[in-house]
Amino acid sequence: MSAQATDLWFWIGIIVLFALVIGGGVAIMWARRNAKAPEAGPQQPFTLDDLRRMLDRGEISKREFDTARDAMIQRTRQVAERERERRGGTDWGGSGNARR
Image 1: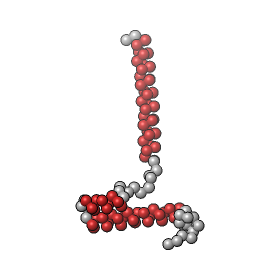
Image 2 (image 1 turned 90 degrees about the horizontal axis):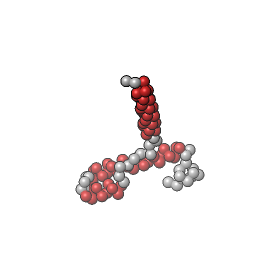
Image 3 (image 1 turned 90 degrees about the vertical axis):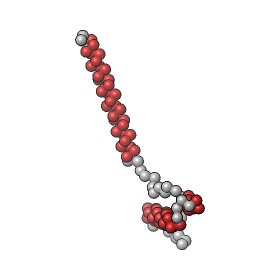
Image 4 (image 1 turned 135 degrees about the vertical axis):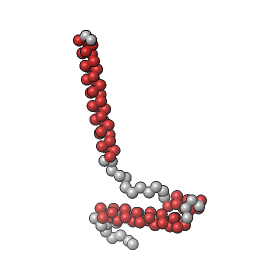
């Protein structure tokens, strides 16, 4: 192999290595960003109306409906309580004189 061909393969190798390093860096940055993405909060896979329709169609029993409904209500209360604590103990109005 001539010196010119060896130089060509050397530079092709350098370019390929550079591309792999850049591509790997981009992939790592993307993966880290997605892994650290904040959660949007508690996710409910369906609404109370969806549960009612499932009950009406016979997809779930009355007992399953009641259990799922109670769990949804409990999650909603927990989220509201965390938000209230975050706001310094006040309800949504901010005055601290919440009507109950």
